[in-house]
Length: 506
Image (cartoon, rainbow, N blue to C red; front, side):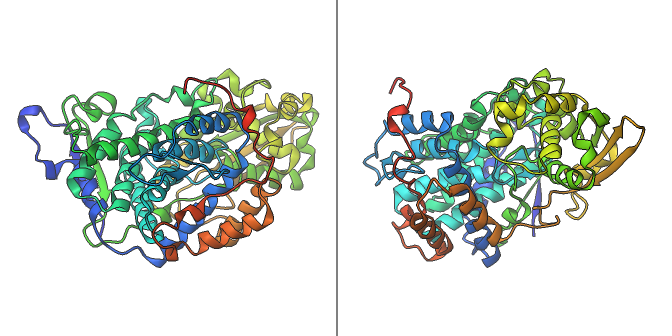
């Protein structure tokens, strides 16, 4: 049964014992030899497929081109056989594979999510853990165990510790979770994982400016950087190097100075010894390439497009008022007070964090496309800009309450919409969760994950390679030591132009 651990700040003279420190408790979870359930194994396979889908669709986007070019200048080290970079067959050092593949997975904002006290994309754990697994010659079962730990730690940290209200980026929970997952993968002892977790956290606390205002290409790099830092932290800890302690609870530590301060108090849930790691089952993926809070709104807009075609014409619409949760209003809604969210020349990264833009385009098109819906031409269409500027958001306390509910049956990421037409007619509707959510209209199962992969890989990967990868992913529990290279994907000839890679320092 999950146990909640009280976490607070301690003065140095209180000398908090190691076994009572959160980082050590995380390490003990990572070393627990409990078996992974069949249900969790099946979901791990789904998320490996999901990550590959969005990574392959990103192969020629500028952040991936740059990150891949950097990685290719760092060949395999003497400690293992190296790790493969998505889309190509070359091997590189594992931390650089984690970097390049992490950017590829994150770029389109199109993989899995978990939202509670804070936000996360737990699939960001997979690139660093897989990179180390390939480098070390691990088996499919080893990888499954490592990924299960990564999800378990990240989800439980996200349930308990809010980063965003202190403007700390959510990847501060990813560094420790990836380090713990790598520790499980490699069968490291608790002391080594403890030091890895501490170093990974210490090096991955950064501000949320990467997700504010004019959002830059760093948004895709941030989780990749956390994964790279986790790999390097494990390497240092394996060599006997130590971390700041206690990293969470110290009087000059993360909680005291970056989070809730010296009087902070958190209850962090972690599985007890012998309890299966099931947190991955609480997470959910995206049907649409947009920030998670936008998922349900795209689905509702598509419904309204068919039911009320008159609302697609700005001449018929006086206003569109979206009533939603605190997070949706203040981070991706008009409550952010970011004029860029209403700018037709805004970056793609900014537009996928703009509910007014996303709802408008989905409403007019009755569909959503990971490329076309963000094109400069689409954003600048006059009738879209006119309707877009009539859309605003407000916080609704009830939707905020449901957003933060610990009851999975009522937890919601949507809201209600009120469309006032110029003739005085008012159209209202609401949606609680996205169609693809486990409680949604069309929950994602293996069939949907496979279809997402086939759709995004079409034209970029040859059919035989698509089938080979899907077969390998389905057989993940059976892959023997050294066979995890089969989880890489090779793009079709001519898809990647290596000559187009930008030049840098390396």
